[in-house]
Length: 258
Image 1 (cartoon, rainbow, N blue to C red):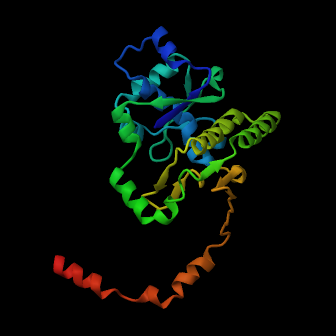
Image 2 (cartoon, rainbow, N blue to C red; image 1 turned 180 degrees about the vertical axis):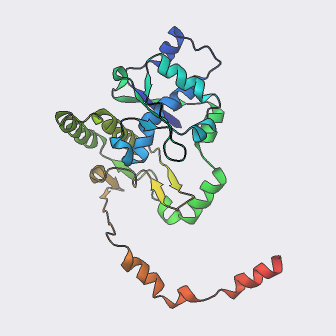
Image 3 (cartoon, helix red, strand yellow; image 1 turned 135 degrees about the horizontal axis):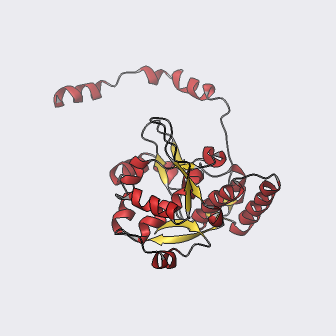
């Protein structure tokens, strides 16, 4: 089940009924675009300190063809605000919730078939990566559990501390982390290998380290190991004689197929 996360105080169906868009629309496309304001920083904590969340047109258009009409509507009716700043090759236009909607988020189901399919990414690539890294992927199952109440209590206390420090993004930080613990609770897992640098992104790798203290696997606590210096790990590979051996069978196969 694919979900979107929108402000708790936004009744989107009623809002659209009271303010009908002047274009053909699907409510799930609105849900997806609104959800990006929270999903993007949840996936990348670097955006926690951004005043506006950059939403790149190229990736959005592949999912919502008339995305510009949706964004213009959301800005016109005071749901979103924009910095309207675009720098080619450096920065996408940024968006944030208008003050009224900087509230706790709630989940909404997305059922539009084409959108659900596009949000699944490249199925062939995803399947290949899950097979290749199955020794990691296999642990994302029903045994992975989070103590949701304690995790939420921690987030509430953190939110209060950020508010006391006059952090302008206190609500955004809370929502991004809240989204993450909801996904673990709901067994809504993702397992993505970046196509460029082949870095692994999962519910656990993108989660704040403090929240991992509330996660168990089959009743056992999780343990985190962080390589502060990767040279010893790389040296172990480079000092292995097998690393320098040539696999002649692959070369032979290449010649036969050429």
